[in-house]
Image 1 (spheres, helix red, strand yellow):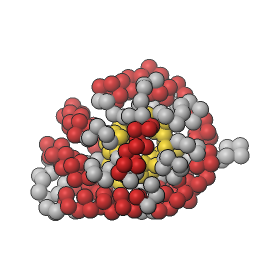
Image 2 (cartoon, rainbow, N blue to C red):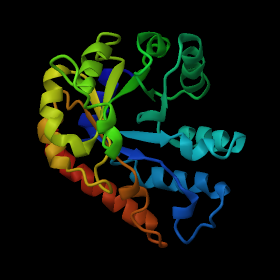
Image 3 (cartoon, rainbow, N blue to C red):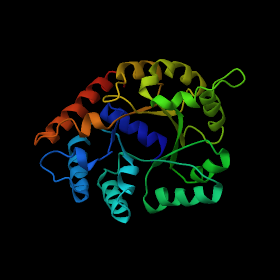
Length: 266
């Protein structure tokens, strides 16, 4: 999916919601047995219930990889269930030396046909370059995350800047606004204005709204640009909105609630 197609989806649905499919069998609703075979029908039902309000879906690959070959098959079928007009993200956080990154890129872009994959920038340009060689595909680079340990490295002081600021400035030179996004946690919303000064036109993937306590209005006010420039992810807040037999009704309600809130900023 190219940038304009993504922008068109955002404007059409008046939404910048990314629904996260971090499916844990221990948290499946009571209507499902706690077995891996039920991940796919659960995911398909969630996608059907939320696609009216979502412009993107993010599959956290760890929740599938734990099951080996079977998990990869479930992930592929889940990807195929996502409407083609929705932006699909493999949340895999890959990044390795060039040859290895080339294989990762082929896995997620050729074999699986995701639109985007999350990457870690620690190994530098040659670890990210192979992903950027694919047309109409995206990398989403970790910049400033919402987890407690982000300060261990991301906030380290360099000469006149923090490490995450160096990442934004440096990685933005590897790609462009048509193939590169950054991850910025919603619990860092107060810093989004500063981040926008560094990368004014890039899209930002913002996790942490909902269960992690991020504030959507703050994210939209500080982080949006003329093209919206945001994909705000909610995973647990939507897919586990209820563990009862009303799980689809509640998931749809939570997705719609976020879309209505988002529509004021489109």
